[in-house]
Length: 397
Image (cartoon, rainbow, N blue to C red):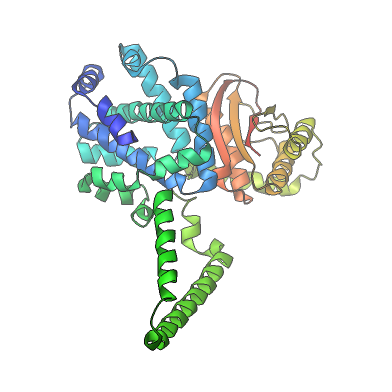
């Protein structure tokens, strides 16, 4: 059963009745809004699964979120009263910000126009549907003991179904609003299809040896044309690969999916911090970075979390203290030397200011990104009550 079939089973009359019970107004079509959000989020998953590194991060995010809030109670139990419903929506809002960081604002705007729902209801439905989607994926991973590759393959198989099920009116709004133009060009084929193609190629090759003598010149010409075509394609492919940093298709994976919503109001501050970093010459010799570096280089499996007291924030601020800035360079050196590392940065504050926590985590993520670390390798989340320093977990090594 695919994600669309599973969601159709959930989207029964009783589900819509619950939405009517818990909402403050009846503006718009709740069923159309729910399906529109679900289809849009699945489109985002398909796009993320097209990158091996992004798929790995997605697998870790879904698994961790499911273990934390998804397992245990059934959906009916979570919808039984208003407090449980609100908690589900709250968790889903965190999912949306974590797994689809650049989707939230354009998604709310697009669905509001598409289904004519109010801003409050659209926000509520987005959180709810995000929770349901992660719950479906988490159950699938755990029930079938999926690996990262299994999950990526499973998600990719929804590509054709998405275009079959999603209304044209939704796709016309979704694709430009969320930067999903490349979905129309993606081609996914199953392993079975690949085997059939190979068999056909073998049959063609075999037949080419059985042609009659009088048709040999024509056959030779065709083979020469094919050979020239293959050589030209290989040369073009090599040139594209060598210049991939200047070609937009290779960078498109980074643009909409991992764009930081906070970047609009963080950029100026981060520019100041970079200039300060140039003035600070004190070496970093903190134990936390030394331990993290040894752990990354060692054979111990991924999953260990470190308290990074080398990164100290100013009180009630997401700016790092000047003496902490060299730690960013040290961490960057560790990350750039191992292309497999993926890190989750968790922000804290003594007063449990969730917004500040997220800003602190994103501030470090932004600094590392500006130095050249792929955003897909970095995750930034809020961690609750803690000191004025983050924790960092090596989710992949």
